[in-house]
Amino acid sequence: MLDVILVIIGYLIGSISSAIVVCRAMNLGDPRQGGSGNPGATNVLRLAGKVPAGITLLGDWLKGTLPVLLAWLATEDPVVASAAGLAAFFGHLFPVYFRFQGGKGVATGLGVILAWSPLALLATVVTWLAVAGAFRYSSLAAVVAFAMAPIYMLWLSASPVLTAATAILTAAIVWRHRENIVRLAAGEESRIGSSGS
Image 1 (cartoon, rainbow, N blue to C red):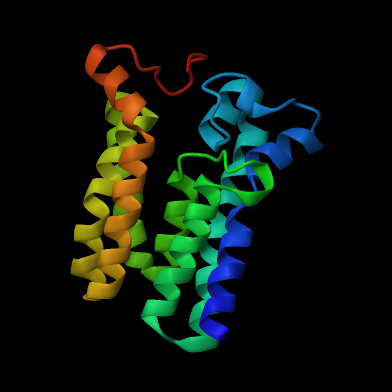
Image 2 (cartoon, one colour):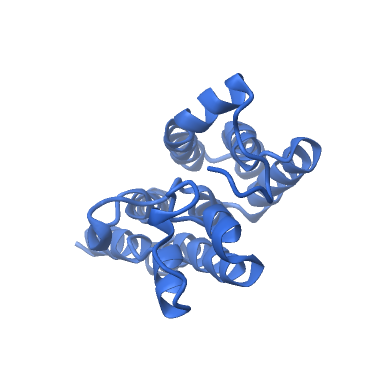
């Protein structure tokens, strides 16, 4: 029963949309109505600047990390920690509080990976920074970094359970970025710092 409660808590925490909460609190409008329409830190950066985007990023990150830490503390079971992390992640993608219309999951996914394996998180973030720095595409950086994340998880945690859970994150993030991938292929994707979608 405790396992189920931890998963439900993870989903409910993950369903809190940091972008929408931050933008409403700062009277910035609804991020779903501007820019790319995605309620995430990158779109908030486009629409409102660095401070709101930074707060959004921190909120999205923490809502991925905290449910997993709670699961570790309560059970020390990697299966429960994986389930709680996935619940938080999918809560971000499909938030119950916002008609199941959520973000793409990058920051929340990174927060989950942090609580699963800090070293795997470090490797994933370094990959994101390298790709983003070289090409200036947030979406490309996310897809490449998360494509590598299961490999990093297997290498650095040696946990098949956590590796499988990371692979699920990867598949979902690639799927959520499918329109970005099409735009990248067509040369139409907006670069970091631009005002496009």
